[in-house]
Length: 580
Image 1: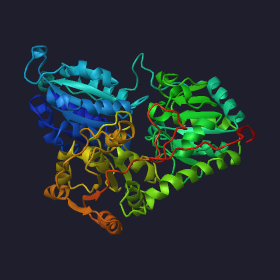
Image 2: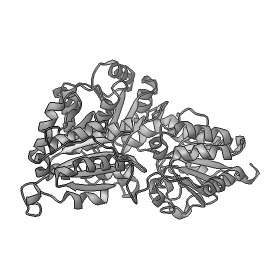
Image 3: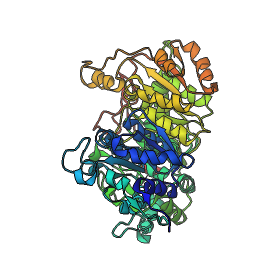
Image 4: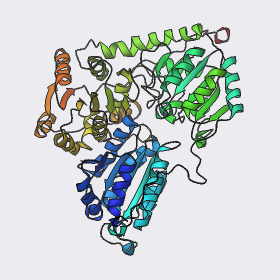
């Protein structure tokens, strides 16, 4: 019989059995036994030492979104545990699988306000799929197996294991690890209903103006191939939510672009004019629907999702299919008839022309000599062969990056969608680079979000990570300033920033950095950045007056589109869609 082992050793062996080779963590008193055991398992598991626990969880998110595997976080109790709360909320909103292990005081001290004790379970339950406190070493194997199963099955999400220190130090006999593949009353893999499939197929076959809204669920289920086959068979135009971008190549003939507040005009107008919406793996966020009562007024709606609770939550639908996107599309595609919708597709041309003339051409080819955000994004994308992983922070940089970056392969956008977490980007880019060391990672950020987690430059220094960082620097909290200009009478309250010398700051971390102030030097600077064998910062100075257009005001109808400070979208007159 094998000699008894510590509970901390049992945890690490359980992680190894689950295929974990990378963790993101920060040590502290209540989790020291686990880190002590990690010292003996460096060949099996590499821990990435972050500079703040929020950096750990965002890095794990970036890792998970690129690999499709759970990101693993190990932090201490008290402030260590509470510092991951923002990331748990972010991962929960964006369906990112995480296993977060927090240290905790010994079981005997629970409830005594012991040093660095917090009620981790009470705090995290609203933000996770499952939270569990391990008070005995005998529970470790069971809890870890259950945690990984819950995090990855069904709609993915974060789980928390709060690990009491006495359980880390107790000794138990180690048995063969058994992965979890079933929990009574938890049914993450729904059986697809044939009647639901047939009902949806009938709606699709009868439709003259069908439109696909593809969300993050397509990427999560690895359904990119199935989505394209489905759309091509019935000749249905597609658009993506923010998190759904990269599920379809940007240049695919049926790809109309991005929907939503700062989405493409053609996407939003098509939503208002189509007679059928096929929503796949998306949750009808308010940033997508605008005014919910006036969303898609002419359309019937089919909703495909693995999470039944999303049906009719925000938008009432005519048909729903409960199931994994990949499996649903595999079964639905044979039921739909081949079709052609050339006139419907060509009806988008005028909207694309309007957007190009009023927004895109001015953003990509400015005549005033200023450097535009979209211009920088497009140049970086093209210089990377449109093959890089795009990571963004939140705000104007995020929207312009999503609009102007081009995608040729899946899992190529990492951004904070539902929670909109400033500071997400830098650690997420680091996690993405660790997950995909052979791919170029281009991280676009603003000066506000960058400074929220700027300490994670220490990770880049310590692990020599070649992240390419493009700072779109306007010395403002740009998106808040935009709203203040448009909706608050230009009262710029607490949005102007006094910033450090970013080039000097980055050089202090051993990162090559340069300022870009002249449009004529931009191309060469991008070329130097991408050719450099290591991390690089381009601090690109952007005019604070630049706004992100198109824009649909919050809560407005999707065809109420601002194209500039002085121009709004005008509906095309006398369009007879019934004859298409």
